[in-house]
Image (cartoon, rainbow, N blue to C red; front, side, top):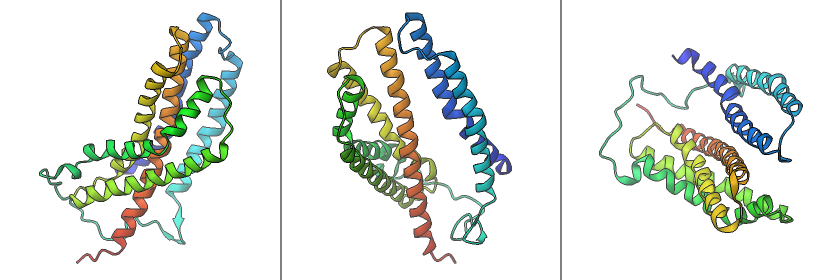
Length: 245
């Protein structure tokens, strides 16, 4: 129910992403141990990381959830929406044009966001996997700023088309529109592995795709959060001016 929704959100925030990372790193660490490579992470280091998560990350997530749930914005009680919302949801029309279907718009949003970074992504992957030095950190900061701007703008456009088609379920659409960038990053990493590297064998292949999956997952979470934040600001702004009879 709605009364326990915040508790589920808190638990997923605490467990979901760290669990995925722990599983992937454990598999990679097991492969490194079996093959006796220098990439093996000692058990004591993993234990320290676990204690950092338990005693730092988990309490901060719980504290942030409780503070956010009871926060008062601008001295007033938190308002769920700037205008009156019907108690009974309206049915979403099924005969919408193709540009009003979220599944058709989300891949285009991710492609546009990926297009703003794919040139710089080549140099980053070269620095990571071909052991080349990376120097242009100022340019990287500029590309990151462009990525944030493009993710916000494309997500707002997708949400606008969905709302224009009377589809009010924009929250996950906004998150997926931004997070879809990570899918193209991972697909590009496959192309880079096949055509730009000379890696082979279980160790190199597993480490490459394991770490690229984690990088893509983190990037998807970041871009999805940015997209949802921008869409939330956009939706609240336009509905502040709506006159409801």
